[in-house]
Amino acid sequence: MFTGIVEELGEVVSVEPGPVTRLAIRGPLVASDATDGDSIAVNGVCLTVTGVQEGTFTVDVVAETISRSSLDSLGPGSPVNLERSATPATRLGGHLVQGHVDGVGTLLERGPDAVVRVGLPVQLSRYLVQKGSITVDGISLTVVEAAAGSFTAALIPTTLARTTLGTTPVGGRVNLEVDVVAKYVERLLSAPGASGGTVGREDREGA
Image (cartoon, rainbow, N blue to C red; front, top):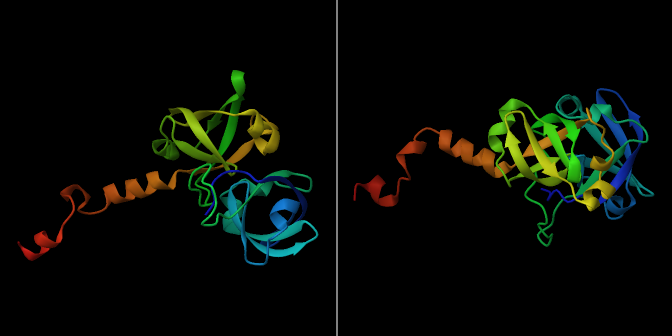
């Protein structure tokens, strides 16, 4: 679990393609206390550390993750947003983020006052609400305007300076994760018997 607050702007050192793609990523801060098996979000994708050496850590990325995210576009020198998994003492500065990508979006435009418009798969639009949360490349952002197939968000100077969104070009692909709470609510409301209300102890016993 993560919070969507990027700790460090890292850099891809190497990419070893294969049935399982291995990435080596330089991130001295997040690697400082990392050990094998730890989780680190890389551009919003929860990945497992397989090795650490001198400020660089390695992760293995399976084909399923490659096909459902923008990680296939990474190469040596690519900047990446990094966040270590949350602990019970972590400040929840963003929102609850799982590191499970729901879809790949596209940066459509950069407007005045650092407002960006991002396109997203239409089926994800139903999870967005004005002033709600969405994760873009691992960054917790507040939705300014939600529309079918796109949304806008305002980027503060810190976000522009310390994350990949400062340099992502128009047309660039970004990983999206919608608010997990919205997905659970949808699931509960669509479950069999959801419209019948809650059944209590008295109801079951005929009291």
